Image (cartoon, rainbow, N blue to C red; front, top):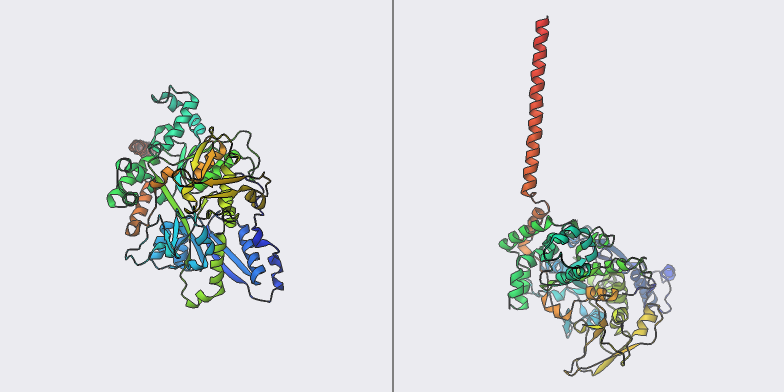
Length: 568
């Protein structure tokens, strides 16, 4: 993504004539309304909190303050809610946690009639509506009794994949001797080896490569039982995924296999992997791979975007390229990947009158504010993840702001119909943007995004999309896959051909405790046998030495006593 001065990305039509909240004392004396929000760390452009407060004050004369707390993992968030020490109006958590919280009665249903931005702009790839009845398309829809759908409780925020982020140059330099002695690799030149690493991580053997001695000690994996369990699942059941003709639903069930047998197989496979890694991490990997402490990281796609940017740019504003850039790649192995979804939900409040209060009213307004294209662009720009909010395939500048942002960020053509595009590869992002089947064509004005939102001058560029010979509108980005922008594009959006192999995590339910126990075994598993034998031998030698030393000392002491008695 191109990055410019972005700290003042404020929605023009929202902020026109807005008075700062510092003047709120001049209002009619109304009390401050507090909306308590709980979200993951580093997941929102914090300037949006003030923007929302200013918008509400200008429009309603109300002082609304967002009290914003963060957590590190979904499990931490879950425990916070369980203790009940703090009450929240709005929480953001992953899809499996929405499932757990809904099943346990912690959530209140969402009123989507109050979320006009969300219902208009959310991507139909992930969330569709029929007369306001929502459906989270890739999530399991029913609880055990089948009495509700998760879409009743969740509005999507960000989504992405869990894949492999890597630096082929680091891997080759760190394990040069291993590559030189390997029959398959030793006769290849440096660039051929590099290309082979890139191809391998994207192939059906992409996860298997994590277990290969060729990358031993260069990688870190997630200190997260669910994410690392998913990697183990792909490796243990690799043949199934490659050979099956099962439906997506059955394959997704296999991805979530938490039977006792599967847990044991995956545990043993992860213990094997542990001997091949540099270490475990949750948040440090995205920095460690840039500073070249490691060369491979099992990573969430948003963190991959962040790392690729930081490897290319020398400054925090992403404006000055490094003289010696760190070239990072992100791959989804051919076998498949986890697609995750982070969603907003409203915790159930005991006081029924809360749902007619201003706190609840402005909670939903804040959620809908985050679902506007302008706010979505700000957050995508900030955190590198992919938003549920896309475009609405009209000629309206606001409706197409997200699509314009993606084209502005990644497409390297100039929008000229006569341009020769034969030297570029194309990337189909049509599945992720809403296209009205009844329209014949629509256009996207890039200058609106670049000048109005990003404060960057850009020549007038308008992309026009029309139907192909099959009557379908295709949104194709023209890119160079080896370029910086190309590597970012591949991290942020999965290829359309991969969509059918993106699997969703479910809550493990009654097996969750067994998964926790499995993970504890992986983290503290017994040392390899040769190390155990060496340690035992060392202990025996030390004890033997100490024992012998003590016996000799006692013998000498008795002898001295005997000599003294004789001398007397």
